Length: 428
Image (tube, rainbow, N blue to C red; front, side, top):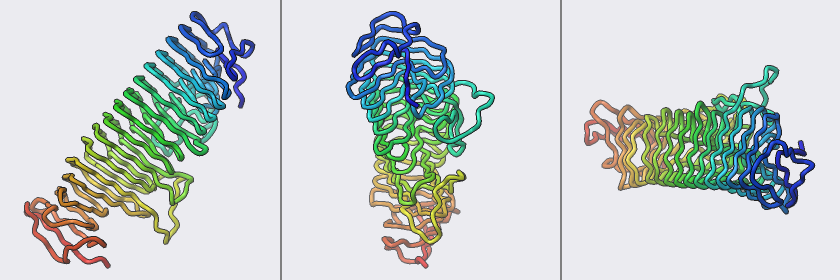
């Protein structure tokens, strides 16, 4: 649905007064190229605050407030957003507070090959109450997340879609539920970057989403999520550098629905810290590359893979071999389990200059000369390249291992330094 009205409507570099609701804006100054010192306030449902459209539009909003209440009607097309760039526009926001109250009432939306840059601003989406006649759906018009995500809420605070790019600097993004920094419907390529930002979900939801075709980057950020730091889907990637994350469930939930069995998500974590109440990395019927270097991780379960219970999951046909999950941990001291429970693909873990204390179930483990794995409970693994000197287990703990292609250990039982046993057998 085309947006034909907003409190401030900018089209191809011009302020369009007859499509603007002037009664909802006070103070400051509004021009063709910028607005400053204004306050936008409206309780009209689905009314956009600032709408900037057209590739001739390069607009700056500064030192202002936008406060919108009432439900939106479709966040996929940005209806009801606090600030929005569309159809090739560029929107810069500096020192602005945007607050929304209502279902699918996003604080900021960028779509249609547009660019959004946000500096020193605070965006808050408080969500709302679902209409009595609302019927759950997936896609345009949905007012709550798909059930397969395992989260609740009624609003995504910020949305980047359709070949657009968004950049956030020194800003705070807060969503009551569902999602804080979301991506969707890439239609090719979407880029979202946050630098020195605070990102929070209060009651539930994710702090970021990397949908198929989307690329998320976080530098020196603070993540405080009631659920996940990020959900990833399809061919997507995310990079976290020197970021602190505290998560009520997982750091990353990686899944694949209605996609291809060849799709691979790539997650990279450089430095920073992660604390989760559940598995750090939770992979549901998806292929993934997970690369972690020098991060401090606090979790009882480091990596868990499962068959997705989502009815729309991507199913691997019988007899097909897929990429699987490959996790590489570098320059770290780790404690936690690796639990591979996805019977449609394999999981492989590589330790590079890393120590790991924890059990491993049904995964391949490769250990370089500068690493060590200590099994804290009975484990079942496939051994890649590894030396007995780099494997340990306490008395009473048995590691049952199948020799993989790169394993040079002979079949037999090895008594480990701390009294546990390693039982190696040849592959069948």
